[in-house]
Image (tube, rainbow, N blue to C red; front, side):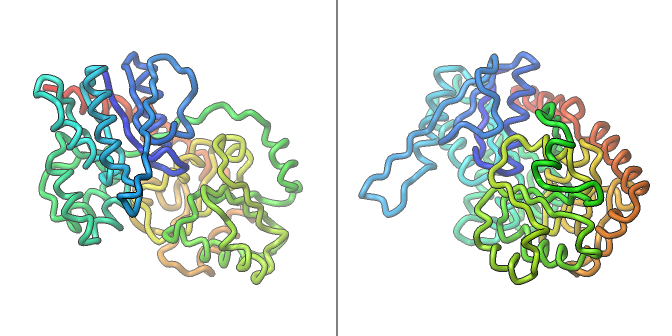
Amino acid sequence: MKIGITCYPTVGGSGVLASALGDELARRGHEVHFISYERPFRLPANAPRIHFHPVVINDYDLFKYPDYTLPLSVKMSEVSRDHQLDVLHVHYAVPHATAAILARSMLPPEHQPRVVTTLHGTDTTLLGRDAGYGPAIHHALTCSDAVTAVSSFLRSETQRLLHFEGPIEVIHNFFDPRPPQRSREEVRQELGLNEREAMVLHASNLRPLKRIDLLLETAARIRPAGSFKLVILAGGSFEPFVDQVRRLGLESRVIVREKVSEIEDYLLAADLGLVTSETESFCLSILEAMCFACPSVARRVGGIPEVIEDGVSGLLVPSDDAEGLARAVESLIQDPSRRAALGRAAQHRARERFSAEAIVPRYEALYRSVMK
């Protein structure tokens, strides 16, 4: 098959999933064309059967803000025509599905690709509530040949918030890690961790829904204070949180690494993950840690219970209480045997339910279905 993929190329779960999906599809013999304003940060360079088509965004004085949707739709149309694409698979409804629907309408019927839209979260839970976006998202989903969501929670939220009555297939995220480039010991030495300190890992784009304030408040309550260091892999600027780190006296406890593309080194070195998000459609960072036998402590929100089996492959805390989150983290720091058992179960769950082998064939089957 010839498949076009459009995603946000920056750090974030949707871009990671889209890049990994394109890579896996190419490995399976399909021809994959990425269409975006930048090359996705996790997309391998010079891989066979993977092509990248940049979208040029012009800043005309006529427009108060640069427009992306129209140039994207034109590029989608060109690539679909020139390479005879079978499917345009867009990740996020706005603006990608809207652009794909417009691109398809520019082509004669015999050259129109099928449009598959995958919802990842904020296109429903945030933009779906906005009267300025909701109707456009609903229209894009209605005009798509297939719609998928990364969790049952997100499917329900899409149906509730957008009053969308069409079918939505749940296809969970997957993650197949690349081989780490450094050993666990090398990474821990770089971070300045001693043998007695647990490495607590948080990876996110730092947007408000990630509740970095709660993350830091939780870290400040973990006892004893010298039992851990919190390593934050930041997909955005950490500057807005520096004052809170100082106020909580966490300068020696918090280590920040911004815009890390090769996360496997840090996942190998981590002892447990900590997620304090207000909501998550799936939470790819939890799955990434699971692949390295690293259990996570997280709030019981959104689609996270579909990823973590509470008490078996990680711990879920029912509220946004920093004290409760801190006690859960403490329990795993102080009990290495339990932590290891949860980690083994998490790794097994990741391999069985959320691997490329389990997930990618479902996308292939969906493509073939819409092509009929």
